[in-house]
Length: 228
Image 1 (spheres, rainbow, N blue to C red):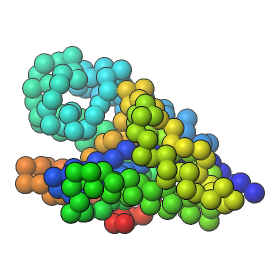
Image 2: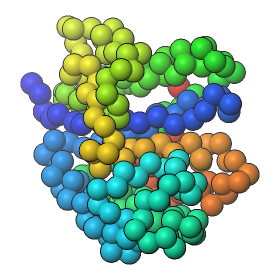
Image 3: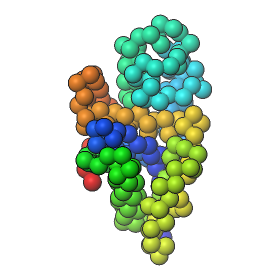
């Protein structure tokens, strides 16, 4: 008997140069999707009112927080790292309070580089899928994984197709959705970037070291990032 179906919006972070592979996700039961969507819509209305960032603007954490591009209609916001950081904290705070939404993160630090790093990234994703599949099997539920992209990142398909058809709880291949069309995917991107910064502790980004724990820690299904 199927008790529930959960949506998992997954995005990655990390870098070959640091050896980190990070996957974070925002999840909700399908019965809670509307409440979560409304909360994210309220967030975008807030960002527009306070920072003049259009509701339609795609927010990519790496670019937004580092000061790239012109996401706001207010040049002062675009030129101010302090304003961008404040907006990012508002976004994370809203995500951490959104009804029905939870987050999670898995990671690995590897010495692999170049092609071997890409392979390792696919391996970590496969282990994540296995973990979610096992979790949903124990809960008696189904899972749908949604990711940023257009479907050309074929390395993700194998992780799904290796699951046993006799027992798998993860439905189909990952469903790819362009980030600019999904507030949930953009939220997963912010979660992944923030988780990465909490692990990396880069000297130039001390301001973000504790954002994950502060804003998302209570909503993390595992209590914090899990090393695979």
